[in-house]
Length: 510
Image 1 (tube, rainbow, N blue to C red):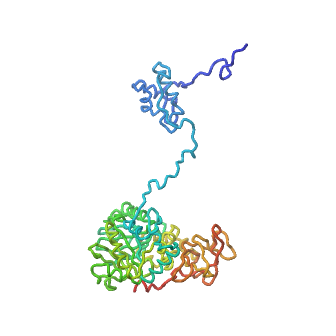
Image 2: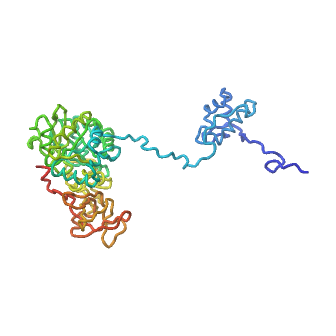
Image 3: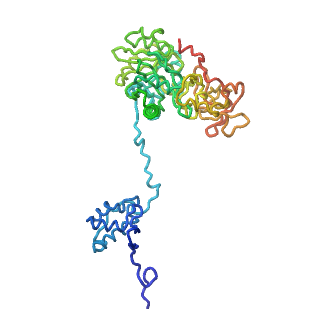
């Protein structure tokens, strides 16, 4: 009978082939193709005395690539065994690293374990807000009060009450999450004048100015107020969303583009806590909170004025008369450690005036009514004219983005411009994110989109803010459709000026 055939089907067994011998120095015989380890490297290791497998591995990097030795380790160990005159098992093997068999990428995707390295940021009055009934919401990494519900109130009832109270009496809002940057140095004024589109060269000490900064491509990067505290020091605020981006940008400009300017920028977001005090009774409220009520008078602290003073009990503070809500309003900043004390002082005086605390939901209502923009509008696709702020672009100086702001695409008359949106039937509501289409073509990209919606206590019906090609003048008296195929059908809307409440601004200047 025939003996069983040898493996491989030939008369001779398969022999291990550990090396293709090469002649001469120029040619190489590779052992580990990933880390370019050659047979000569293994023999060199032997001559140098690195004969232990763990030494061989580290001396030659054999098997240290991402295959962890699957391709070359056995060959390398065989060559070392040959050089030592031993069998491979005597030489030993290195520690095998998992995986031993191929693993799918899907198996390596770890489970989602929360926020990873993203820090949760809480304002210094976080606990105070919770103690006073706040429901929190995430604003980027920050937790901010969303609304302050009273017994049994829904979020809708709460934000409408908060917005109504702020417009009729006074409201307090934690604004600590805004980015805050100290801009200091003899060239600080020149620096700000180059960064912002509007003039900063003649901003007096003790005044704040609303500023807009563009990216190099002429689109809006961020907006905020900057306060002049002294000849050489300014206090800049940015939006919550873009605080980090603006800080990095200012540092880059000073280090790379204008290293000759003598300016330091320092993030002081964590050092200062802020509270907005808004509403027709805001001045009366603050006058009762500061040690010297005279500093709150209109001639001492006019619209956009800034003072450094003290609250009752000696808390140092900075107060600017600026408004996001469209009412007479102030922003009060104190060193962060004093934040709960500041909130308590303000709240003790706001309550007798029938005041309230308000969160981001009511803040959204107030700013949409007024037509003020936030990150939802300044989404990186918008230029200064689209946002309805073209008057803030100076023609008398150069600033970042001023050249590319004027390229033909930016000057098109039919670009989407900021508008207000009313439902045709005032009883109806529509969604943020809806596309605005002509009634006969409810498809494609439409004529614009909606960035924010709210019930307006002032107007008594649902309103929105968004962008429509050509702006509100182009669509006066016409009906558009707010199309939202994913959530609910189409709602007929009309396009109005974005300044839906107090367009003349009398309340802020009162």
